[in-house]
Length: 149
Image 1 (cartoon, rainbow, N blue to C red):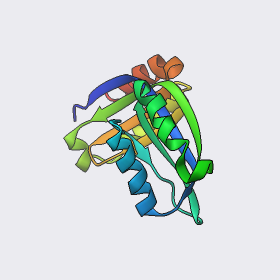
Image 2: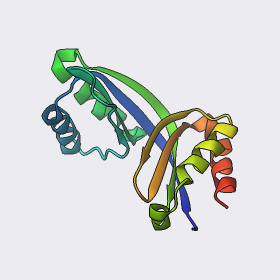
Image 3: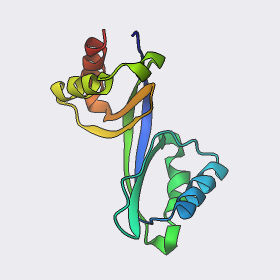
């Protein structure tokens, strides 16, 4: 296994709280965000426990104002936006991860040992993406590189 580790800067994390736990509503939110020309990258939806939920997603910092202009109007302002800008994303990609248990554990352990706080995690069979603060980026990136070397 020889993963590719890439990084991206100037990433905003938006968490929408008090969102209706209705996939049609959530689909409409992302459709409208696309219509205003904003590319959404990482998306995380926790298990739904009631009629309301939270959803987190990332965008480029440059798209923050137009995104918040839209999200601030959701449900007549009852949906609350929590924002963290200036973050960095670390992505580990390798098609061989599909048949290689434990890669995520290595990555998470490396980041933990660097003392980095993870803001958001998304995964697929062949990719692990971590959102970290800009201040923690160097330590996290170096630790991930060493763990997967």
